[in-house]
Image 1 (tube, helix red, strand yellow):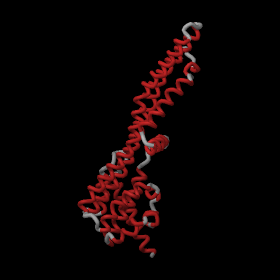
Image 2 (spheres, rainbow, N blue to C red):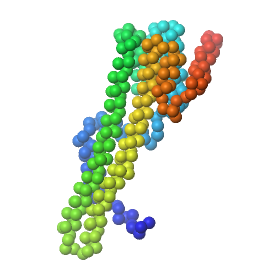
Image 3 (cartoon, rainbow, N blue to C red):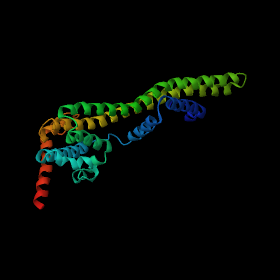
Length: 275
C-alpha cells in the first residue's frame, strides 16, 4: 500500500539465520520431552479451548453418579469402577470424560487411597494439591520455553542484520543498486525478528497459557469434588463446590445443575425398574 514490493521481504538467508538460531536455542534450553509437548500444545491452539460446558456437564454427571453409588453402597462399591475405569459401565456412559486419560487418572488416583484406607479423608487435600502443582508445572514448561524464544527473536533479527551488513561491506565497491539490495536484506532481518516475536510467538505463547489454564481448571474441578466427597459432603454438595470453582462462561447455574443431576437420578431409576 505504501508502494513497496512483497518480494523484497522474501530474504531466505534471513529466515534461515533467524529460524535456525531460534530452533537451536530451544534445543539447548529444553529437554526433548518439553519440546514435544510444546509442539503438541501449539497444534492444540488450532482446536481452541479443550473444555466446553458440555464437557463439564458430562464430568458432573459422572462424578455425581459415582458419589451416589459410594454413598448408598459404601466405598467398596466404587472400587470396581476406579480400579479399572475403562471397563466400568458407569464411566462408559460418559465417553468425553473417559477419553481424557489424565482426568481419569486424577479421579481414580484420588479415590483409590481412600478406598484402600491408606490415607484419611482430611489428608487427601494435600495429595491432590501436590498432584495439581505437578500438572501445572509440567504444562507451563512449554509455555515458558516458547516465551523465552519469542523474547530472543529481536536479538536473532539483529544478528541476521549484522551479518547482512558484513556482506554489504564486502560489496561496498560495487554498484549502488547492489549495495541497496544488501542493506535492504539486512533490515529485513531486524524486521522479521521483531515481527515474529511480537506478532506471532508471544501471542501464541499467551494462547497456550490460556489453554493450559483451562486444562488445569478442569483438573482442579475434579480434585475439589473428590476432596469434598471424601470429607463427608453429600454428593450434590461436592458437585456444587466444584461448580463454584468454574469461570462464569463455563459455570452452570444452580438450577441448571439441579436439572442436570436429576437426569442422572431418573436414569438410575429407569435402569433399576427395567432390571
